[in-house]
Image (tube, rainbow over all chains, first blue to last red; front, side, top):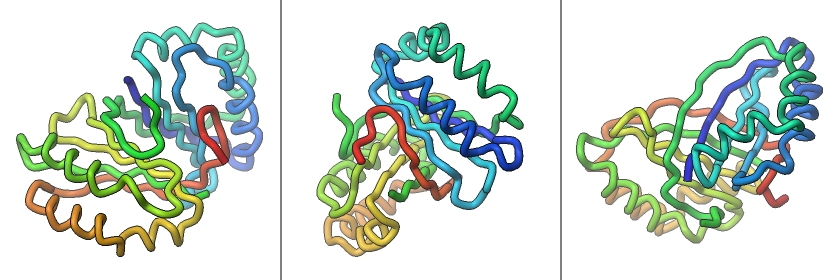
Length: 98
Length: 98
């Protein structure tokens, strides 16, 4: 498995729109086990994306999918920037199918 | 829903032991939707815990469970410290039951 934690900052007032675009573009990605989008409770423009993939290649390939490319293109105007990014090796836990 | 991203640092060489203890103590927590433990790919002592709960109260109550208290007690000697901690409001995504 391969995991990612990534922080994204929406432009002020644009978080909900950006989340809608991200959700719509990430529902059907081969090798994706989980792709969860969350609001940061302490930052009104903060978004966290937590991803679990079967392999790192599956993640890389996803960036070329038409739906994902479209979401990136549509979302760009609402993104102020990116923050923390951590690559993970998920080892297990409750609620994670393997 | 309520989410948490937390970073933990194991003492040098103790990451696998600490992960085993954490995994064993977190399998049966009321209101827990997901509790995934991951190794940080870029930090040989780094651990990330990504949690999703039905409510914030469920998370707080979990800290009093005997299995969790036992894991905290057993794990303490292997923990060097804690890093980032972010409270989240998960809004959706692929692979997340609601």
